[in-house]
Image (tube, rainbow, N blue to C red):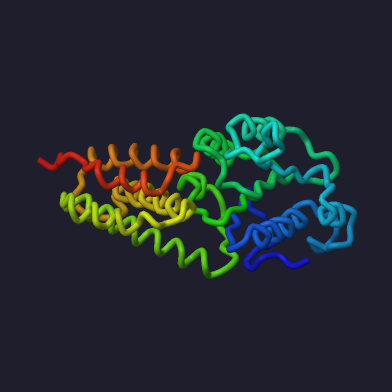
Length: 267
């Protein structure tokens, strides 16, 4: 077994976010970290001990996978719910069955709804001893900045880094256009973004949330919006993020973002 770069199997963090161009790539890396966490051999992950073999076979009782529940037709629901995360938190304080640790794997972590992510944040802030959380996703920007800040982020390819830079650039363009109070320029910009797919739109919204938070904290220069307008904008962005999680059309989202100009509170 080969661990991702920069991972020391003897000094594992309590939480990792693994992003990759494909879910299988992220899951493969997550399983390697899980094997290292649960391994009973001398050089984890050894690949030969009982624990490593059980991880490879997907039958280790201390490797718990949290997925979206299925509906009555056997299809995955849209989101991981807050009750599922609360259930994970309750289970995390129970001692392991066989290994020295417990590992919780979320193959589609970005499908956690907002209450679920907030519940996960509390768990990540005060993790039970001997528990490792592995959050797999295609785009970490779809997770709350506060959740990301409590985890070690591992990008398993260059595409995610490039995508993050693109969404951040779009977010900064959007904030500058809002600050300029030029409705027509903003509408033209929004029209250009309407062909964006839902995943990228969600990443843009999260980038705008993160950037506006950085401005409010004084780590980025305010382009001219003001604190009250930024707070109102963040409420709108959070609403749009929730709407995208239930498959609201991208065109509707950008229409909303580009027709709701913040009031000028600089005077």
